[in-house]
Length: 215
Image (cartoon, rainbow, N blue to C red; front, side, top):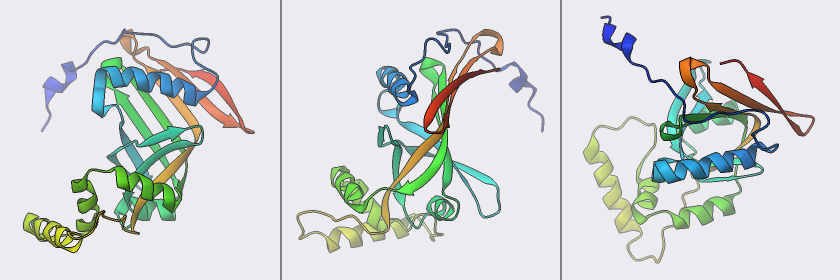
């Protein structure tokens, strides 16, 4: 079932360049610079990333999640602690993140260790979520098999009734955040003829070291 038309699908890049001299010594500062640039062109989808984890079968799995916070200590996202990815992270507490900003012809790859964020931080973030998202966190048995869409609709109605007389919907204890603390961050800038620029930061003895990789 070969699709020969795929052979000709390509784009030549050339919006910008990247050198060791041009990047900031701190990769988190460099990330913020690129992230703010992506926000101008990608808007509400600038925080979209692919999270990759290791399954019990030792085969990597990737899925799209949203970055909700970043700081010097790393990158935070939220999920159901009973989901497949959470189970994988509990067993193998390491992961990678890949950001792709098409409009900027850029990607950033991050890998490191995973830990749960403190419950009080998850509580604060949960309060900021839209009402529908809070109800959804209670209603969805994430990653479990369900019979049909109506099952979810019924669960939503049950949750709405459960909390209809309360001022706020509390965070379920099976839902919260994870922090990825990076040990390697790679910045990729698309260049002509597939000769892309790649600058990688490695954490060595508590200090970030940079090097250039071949495309």
